[in-house]
Image (tube, rainbow, N blue to C red; front, side, top):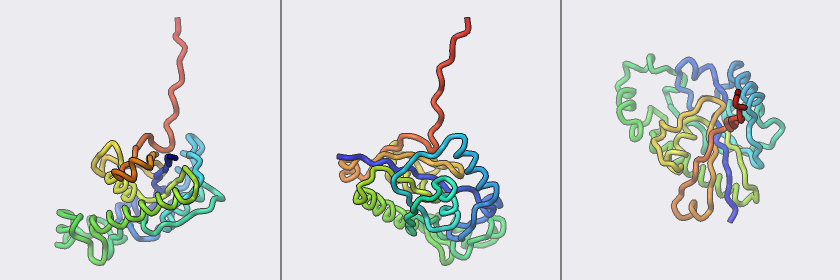
Length: 214
C-alpha cells in the first residue's frame, strides 16, 4: 500500500509573538522580519515539493504559503488553527499576572480554558480530528505528499499524539519557518494511529566528504 509524506511547517514570525503576547486566534500578519527570514531559509535550504498544500486559514499561515509555495492552490483547514486564548488574545503574561483565572490556567491549562477560549483538551481534540480528516483527504486525492502550514501549538499537538518516536509536546518545538517531515504507512496508521517522524524541514544539508590533507 502507498505511504504518505506530510511536511508540518510552522508559519513565519509575527510581531505580536515577539512581544510575548498571546495571539492564538488573532489574525496577525507576518512581520517584515518574519517574511524576510522565510525568504532566507528558502534561498539557503529550499522547502520540499508537495503535491497538496494545506494551511490554517489565519493570515500568518496563508502569507507563509505565498512565500514558500507561491502560486499554489491552498486548501484551508480551520481545525488546524492555533488555540484560542479567548479574552486574553493580544495580552501578555505580565498584563494577566494578577488574574486568578490566569493562575488557574497556568496550573492546569488542559482542563481550564481562558475566559471564552479553549482548554488544552478541547484544542487537542479539535486538532486531532482535523488532522485525521486531512489524512483522509490526502488518501482520497491520489497524492502521496502534502505540506501543512500551520502553528507551533498545532504541530506539537499532532506529533505528541501520533508521532514516533513518542515524546512530550514540548520536545517537538520548532522555530518559525521550520518543522518536521512525517511518514504515514496505511497499515500502521489504521491499526495504531501512529506515524514516523523521520526528518526536520527544511532538510538539513548532507555533510560533504572532505579530502584528507597529507
